[in-house]
Length: 206
Image 1: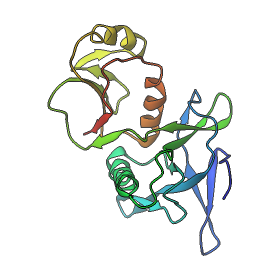
Image 2 (image 1 turned 180 degrees about the vertical axis):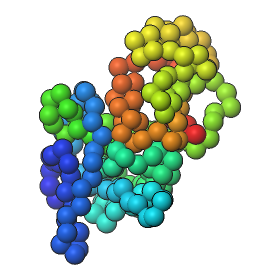
Image 3 (image 1 turned 180 degrees about the horizontal axis):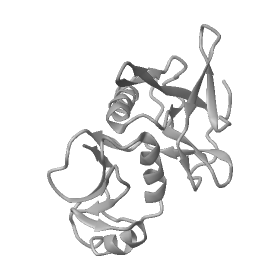
């Protein structure tokens, strides 16, 4: 098994000998640069008539390794996240060969440093519904950010969140289900720079 993944566009050799491209998301910052002892999992962008489909290939996944999810940036979150939830649950349900040190990462391309990068999401629990309580930081399809329905710019978000940091209310990130996976990863990389005391591990997609 290869030790590291490299490249901006991943090429997967399939049984018929053809090559398939996955267009990775792009961001301006590297969160994690290298991951060892890994298994690649691919989610391809497919079109069937007027329908967009997400096709998962996890035949090379080994439960005791770090999983790298290589997902096409063109796919909408409404298709990607349910597949991610299934993969997460499979690993969480494993008892006999469970490895507590094995993490899950999304891959993306750092367009500034020109390298492949990774962002961990092992501890994220997804829900495909709107939260019923707490403070919601919502990333919409049009690129805008709303905190409890109040429009906030990226530059203002940290300052705005500081007003909630000493309160006991839960804060969670939420995302528009019709947003592209590419924009989701850009937002995920961005929120790594935001400090929040009461953030919960649950993310909602709706």
